[in-house]
Image (cartoon, rainbow, N blue to C red; front, side, top):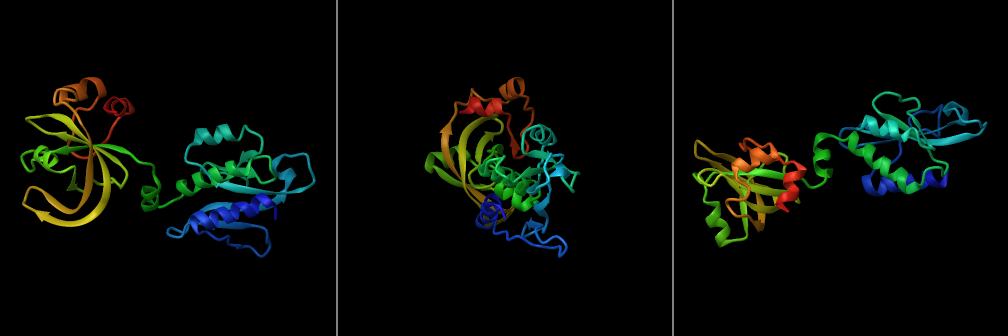
Length: 248
């Protein structure tokens, strides 16, 4: 076993609690790493003749097979030294990486991380994804959010599907204001809360902390449509990078 493979296995165990599984008696050097929840493979390690990768060598080499989400990225990588089309797993954007030092261990770990995310369950992907920015509607007919933020900088709000702790929420206050007024950071999610008045139903809430206020005439409904292509805010939705930059 190469030093790089040892480091890679230690990294997978430390970060993902994944131990290698040796499934084939005929190939004792082959090992898979899999998710704990959906049991899908996110890596396959093999030792194969270098000639099978088109290399002019009679040696045996250790390789790592990983899966990428982006087909274009896979196409770009296989043009670089040490990267190949997936050996033995050629479909679904799998690539093969040499574990002989051609590719630095830190970069190999990066692609292992990418593969872990690409093969993860929806729940795991949600947990692992980077922070995201959302526009969330606030209807003054049901809740006076302006008064709430005048009295406290942190309040509970209806849980938005897909929103997680660390995300940014921009509150769009509906008519008669019709504008984004607040930037908030999500500090906690999935707080149990039962509410049903016939029009609004809630089973959980999230906690949001005020970070910034905006003038009511700055990010109006008209501006959102004309400059950023947002013509409706009926529920939590992502925002374009241009708007995120403007909101600061």
